[in-house]
Structure formats: C-alpha cells, structure tokens
Image (cartoon, rainbow, N blue to C red; front, side):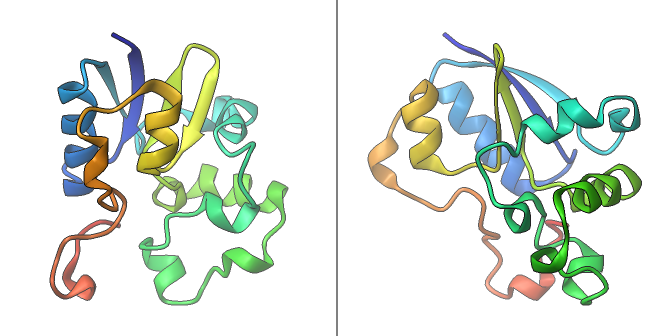
Length: 141
C-alpha cells in the first residue's frame, strides 16, 4: 500500500474516478482541497509537481480563463504560470499527487501505473477526460 497525497477539486467527477481507482489498487488516499490549499506560502512546492512537464501542460484546460482565451498557456513563462496559479487555483492541472518526495500533476494512467501500480490497468481509459457527451456541459473546471 502506498500513501498518496491527492490534491483535488472537491466535487470533481474526474477526481472521484481517479481516487476510486487508486483505492481499488490498494493505495491510501489522503485528500486535500486544491482550491483552499495555501499555495501562496509555498510556490516552490507547487512548482515541483510540474518538473517533468512543459509549462503549457501545467494548466487545467477547462479553467474558464483558459477556455475563454484570456490566458494562453503556450505563451506563458514558468514564473508567470506559477503566479497565475497562485492567484487562480482553478488554473492548476489536477490532480496533484505526492508519494514521499515524488510529485506529479495530472492523471496519466500509464504514468501512475508505472509509478505506484494500478489495478485493472489494462482498461486504458483516459482518466483526465470529461465523460459528458457534450464536453461544454462538463463542470470539470
């Protein structure tokens, strides 16, 4: 059993599916609220979750300010990205997960399986995608 600190948006259906898979895989999930976490006091800690990703992939693509074009992740520097996320936590790609000192952003099923192991990994579903038939109706922001 691995203890996974799981930063989520409460009520997010995608995060609920992800946590369920982790628990079914025998992992202990410690839930934290991504939106109320005091990131302002620990911007360097937040940045560690994105160490292996290009800056544009740090963002939650369903955040309203990204969907309406006010923020264009491809044009933002790492420093700007963190500052924007400190101001608007909805911009943070989720979930953020930590096991020991290792940190990741998002739920790439293959990556999570290689990292800590997942039950029923052969299913290969996209655990970050909105399952709504019309993604515009998804409340996954």
